[in-house]
Image 1 (spheres, helix red, strand yellow):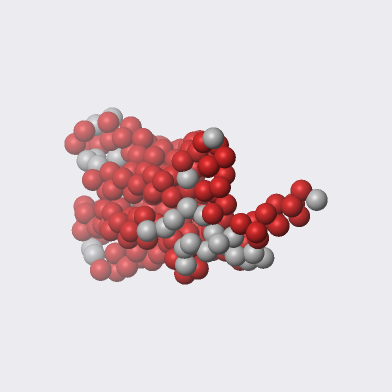
Image 2 (cartoon, helix red, strand yellow):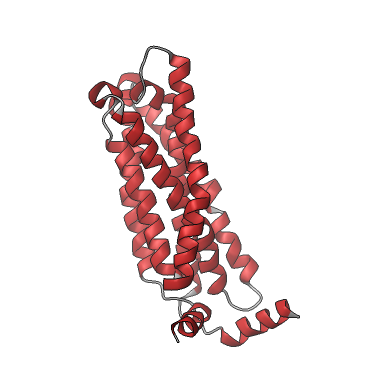
Length: 234
Protein backbone atom coordinates (compact mmCIF):
# COMPACT_ATOMS: atom_id res chain seq x y z
CA UNK A 1 0.00 0.00 0.00
CA UNK A 2 2.79 2.41 0.88
CA UNK A 3 4.57 1.81 -2.44
CA UNK A 4 1.28 2.28 -4.29
CA UNK A 5 0.59 5.53 -2.45
CA UNK A 6 4.09 6.80 -3.24
CA UNK A 7 3.59 6.02 -6.90
CA UNK A 8 0.24 7.80 -6.95
CA UNK A 9 1.73 10.84 -5.21
CA UNK A 10 4.48 11.00 -7.79
CA UNK A 11 1.97 10.78 -10.62
CA UNK A 12 -0.21 13.50 -9.13
CA UNK A 13 2.73 15.82 -8.44
CA UNK A 14 4.48 15.29 -11.75
CA UNK A 15 4.61 18.48 -13.76
CA UNK A 16 7.46 18.51 -16.28
CA UNK A 17 9.81 21.45 -15.69
CA UNK A 18 12.90 20.06 -17.37
CA UNK A 19 12.71 18.61 -20.85
CA UNK A 20 13.09 14.86 -21.19
CA UNK A 21 16.28 15.12 -23.23
CA UNK A 22 17.86 17.57 -20.79
CA UNK A 23 17.24 15.26 -17.82
CA UNK A 24 18.57 12.18 -19.59
CA UNK A 25 21.65 13.96 -20.95
CA UNK A 26 22.43 15.61 -17.61
CA UNK A 27 22.16 12.36 -15.68
CA UNK A 28 24.17 10.39 -18.24
CA UNK A 29 26.93 12.84 -19.14
CA UNK A 30 27.90 13.66 -15.58
CA UNK A 31 28.19 10.01 -14.61
CA UNK A 32 30.15 9.20 -17.77
CA UNK A 33 32.61 12.03 -17.07
CA UNK A 34 33.12 10.92 -13.48
CA UNK A 35 33.75 7.32 -14.49
CA UNK A 36 36.11 8.50 -17.23
CA UNK A 37 38.13 10.27 -14.54
CA UNK A 38 37.88 7.24 -12.26
CA UNK A 39 39.13 4.78 -14.87
CA UNK A 40 41.97 6.84 -16.32
CA UNK A 41 43.45 6.64 -12.84
CA UNK A 42 43.07 2.85 -12.89
CA UNK A 43 45.03 2.59 -16.14
CA UNK A 44 47.71 5.05 -15.07
CA UNK A 45 48.08 3.34 -11.69
CA UNK A 46 49.38 0.25 -13.49
CA UNK A 47 51.48 1.60 -16.35
CA UNK A 48 52.60 5.09 -15.22
CA UNK A 49 52.35 5.95 -11.54
CA UNK A 50 54.82 3.32 -10.23
CA UNK A 51 57.53 5.02 -12.33
CA UNK A 52 56.52 8.62 -11.52
CA UNK A 53 55.25 8.94 -7.96
CA UNK A 54 57.10 6.23 -6.02
CA UNK A 55 60.72 5.30 -5.18
CA UNK A 56 62.38 3.29 -7.94
CA UNK A 57 64.42 0.89 -5.81
CA UNK A 58 61.88 -1.95 -5.97
CA UNK A 59 59.53 -2.02 -9.00
CA UNK A 60 57.18 -4.53 -7.38
CA UNK A 61 56.82 -2.41 -4.25
CA UNK A 62 56.20 0.70 -6.37
CA UNK A 63 53.43 -1.09 -8.29
CA UNK A 64 51.78 -2.33 -5.10
CA UNK A 65 51.91 1.13 -3.56
CA UNK A 66 50.40 2.61 -6.71
CA UNK A 67 47.56 0.08 -6.66
CA UNK A 68 47.00 0.87 -2.98
CA UNK A 69 46.29 4.48 -3.90
CA UNK A 70 43.78 3.22 -6.47
CA UNK A 71 41.96 1.37 -3.68
CA UNK A 72 41.63 4.56 -1.61
CA UNK A 73 38.70 5.66 -3.76
CA UNK A 74 36.68 2.62 -2.69
CA UNK A 75 36.98 3.81 0.92
CA UNK A 76 36.02 7.36 -0.05
CA UNK A 77 33.01 6.44 -2.20
CA UNK A 78 30.60 5.50 0.62
CA UNK A 79 31.69 8.59 2.54
CA UNK A 80 30.96 10.76 -0.49
CA UNK A 81 27.63 9.03 -0.98
CA UNK A 82 26.59 9.72 2.62
CA UNK A 83 27.80 13.33 2.66
CA UNK A 84 26.42 14.39 -0.72
CA UNK A 85 23.24 12.38 -0.15
CA UNK A 86 22.64 14.18 3.14
CA UNK A 87 23.04 17.62 1.60
CA UNK A 88 21.12 16.58 -1.50
CA UNK A 89 18.04 16.06 0.67
CA UNK A 90 18.57 19.41 2.39
CA UNK A 91 19.57 21.81 -0.40
CA UNK A 92 18.62 19.98 -3.59
CA UNK A 93 20.02 17.59 -6.17
CA UNK A 94 21.42 20.18 -8.57
CA UNK A 95 23.74 21.84 -6.07
CA UNK A 96 25.16 18.58 -4.77
CA UNK A 97 25.61 17.09 -8.25
CA UNK A 98 27.46 20.21 -9.34
CA UNK A 99 29.62 19.94 -6.21
CA UNK A 100 30.36 16.25 -6.78
CA UNK A 101 31.33 16.90 -10.40
CA UNK A 102 33.62 19.74 -9.32
CA UNK A 103 35.19 17.56 -6.62
CA UNK A 104 35.99 14.85 -9.13
CA UNK A 105 37.16 17.29 -11.80
CA UNK A 106 39.47 19.30 -9.56
CA UNK A 107 40.98 16.14 -8.08
CA UNK A 108 41.61 14.71 -11.54
CA UNK A 109 43.26 17.84 -12.90
CA UNK A 110 45.45 18.05 -9.78
CA UNK A 111 46.72 14.54 -10.52
CA UNK A 112 47.62 15.60 -14.04
CA UNK A 113 49.65 18.52 -12.70
CA UNK A 114 51.42 16.77 -9.81
CA UNK A 115 55.24 16.70 -9.83
CA UNK A 116 56.83 13.29 -9.46
CA UNK A 117 58.78 11.65 -6.66
CA UNK A 118 62.08 12.84 -8.14
CA UNK A 119 60.94 16.45 -7.69
CA UNK A 120 59.07 16.60 -4.37
CA UNK A 121 59.90 13.27 -2.76
CA UNK A 122 57.44 11.71 -0.33
CA UNK A 123 54.92 14.49 -0.95
CA UNK A 124 54.27 13.07 -4.43
CA UNK A 125 52.55 9.84 -3.30
CA UNK A 126 50.86 11.64 -0.39
CA UNK A 127 49.30 14.26 -2.66
CA UNK A 128 48.40 11.56 -5.18
CA UNK A 129 46.56 9.62 -2.46
CA UNK A 130 44.75 12.77 -1.34
CA UNK A 131 43.62 13.55 -4.89
CA UNK A 132 42.46 9.96 -5.31
CA UNK A 133 40.42 10.29 -2.13
CA UNK A 134 38.80 13.37 -3.68
CA UNK A 135 37.93 11.33 -6.78
CA UNK A 136 36.24 8.74 -4.59
CA UNK A 137 34.22 11.38 -2.76
CA UNK A 138 33.04 12.87 -6.05
CA UNK A 139 32.03 9.55 -7.55
CA UNK A 140 30.23 8.52 -4.38
CA UNK A 141 28.12 11.65 -4.51
CA UNK A 142 27.49 11.28 -8.23
CA UNK A 143 26.33 7.68 -8.29
CA UNK A 144 23.23 8.03 -6.14
CA UNK A 145 22.53 11.66 -6.94
CA UNK A 146 22.37 11.16 -10.69
CA UNK A 147 19.92 8.27 -10.30
CA UNK A 148 17.69 10.44 -8.10
CA UNK A 149 17.93 13.32 -10.55
CA UNK A 150 16.72 11.06 -13.34
CA UNK A 151 13.95 9.24 -11.47
CA UNK A 152 12.52 12.30 -9.70
CA UNK A 153 12.17 14.07 -13.06
CA UNK A 154 10.75 11.01 -14.80
CA UNK A 155 7.16 10.93 -16.02
CA UNK A 156 4.82 8.41 -14.39
CA UNK A 157 5.63 4.76 -15.11
CA UNK A 158 8.99 5.65 -16.69
CA UNK A 159 11.15 5.97 -13.59
CA UNK A 160 12.95 2.67 -14.22
CA UNK A 161 13.80 3.74 -17.77
CA UNK A 162 15.10 7.12 -16.65
CA UNK A 163 16.99 5.53 -13.77
CA UNK A 164 18.86 3.28 -16.18
CA UNK A 165 20.59 6.17 -17.95
CA UNK A 166 23.05 7.07 -15.16
CA UNK A 167 24.06 3.41 -15.02
CA UNK A 168 25.24 3.66 -18.62
CA UNK A 169 27.86 6.18 -17.52
CA UNK A 170 30.15 3.50 -16.09
CA UNK A 171 30.73 1.50 -19.31
CA UNK A 172 30.86 4.67 -21.41
CA UNK A 173 33.48 6.20 -19.11
CA UNK A 174 35.45 2.95 -19.10
CA UNK A 175 35.42 2.78 -22.91
CA UNK A 176 36.63 6.34 -23.41
CA UNK A 177 39.22 6.15 -20.63
CA UNK A 178 40.91 3.11 -22.11
CA UNK A 179 40.42 4.38 -25.65
CA UNK A 180 42.18 7.63 -24.76
CA UNK A 181 45.24 5.84 -23.39
CA UNK A 182 45.28 3.49 -26.37
CA UNK A 183 45.20 6.44 -28.78
CA UNK A 184 48.01 8.20 -26.93
CA UNK A 185 50.14 5.05 -27.00
CA UNK A 186 49.74 4.95 -30.79
CA UNK A 187 50.53 8.63 -31.34
CA UNK A 188 53.45 9.05 -28.93
CA UNK A 189 56.74 7.32 -28.32
CA UNK A 190 57.23 5.60 -24.96
CA UNK A 191 59.43 8.45 -23.79
CA UNK A 192 56.90 11.11 -24.82
CA UNK A 193 54.08 9.20 -23.19
CA UNK A 194 55.87 8.74 -19.87
CA UNK A 195 57.13 12.32 -19.79
CA UNK A 196 53.96 14.21 -20.68
CA UNK A 197 51.44 12.15 -22.65
CA UNK A 198 49.87 10.39 -19.67
CA UNK A 199 48.96 13.77 -18.17
CA UNK A 200 46.78 14.74 -21.14
CA UNK A 201 43.63 12.76 -20.13
CA UNK A 202 43.77 14.12 -16.58
CA UNK A 203 44.12 17.74 -17.65
CA UNK A 204 41.62 17.33 -20.50
CA UNK A 205 39.10 16.31 -17.85
CA UNK A 206 38.70 20.03 -17.08
CA UNK A 207 37.04 20.51 -20.48
CA UNK A 208 34.67 17.60 -19.89
CA UNK A 209 33.74 18.89 -16.44
CA UNK A 210 32.92 22.34 -17.83
CA UNK A 211 30.60 20.71 -20.37
CA UNK A 212 28.95 18.66 -17.64
CA UNK A 213 28.51 21.70 -15.42
CA UNK A 214 26.96 23.68 -18.28
CA UNK A 215 24.36 20.96 -18.79
CA UNK A 216 23.55 20.56 -15.11
CA UNK A 217 23.41 24.20 -14.07
CA UNK A 218 20.53 24.75 -16.49
CA UNK A 219 18.36 22.13 -14.74
CA UNK A 220 15.58 22.89 -12.27
CA UNK A 221 14.75 20.85 -9.19
CA UNK A 222 11.95 18.33 -9.67
CA UNK A 223 8.46 19.18 -8.36
CA UNK A 224 8.64 16.24 -5.95
CA UNK A 225 11.86 17.49 -4.36
CA UNK A 226 10.72 21.11 -4.28
CA UNK A 227 7.61 20.08 -2.39
CA UNK A 228 9.72 18.05 0.05
CA UNK A 229 12.10 20.97 0.66
CA UNK A 230 9.17 23.30 1.35
CA UNK A 231 7.87 20.91 3.99
CA UNK A 232 11.26 20.82 5.73
CA UNK A 233 11.56 24.62 5.73
CA UNK A 234 8.23 25.13 7.48
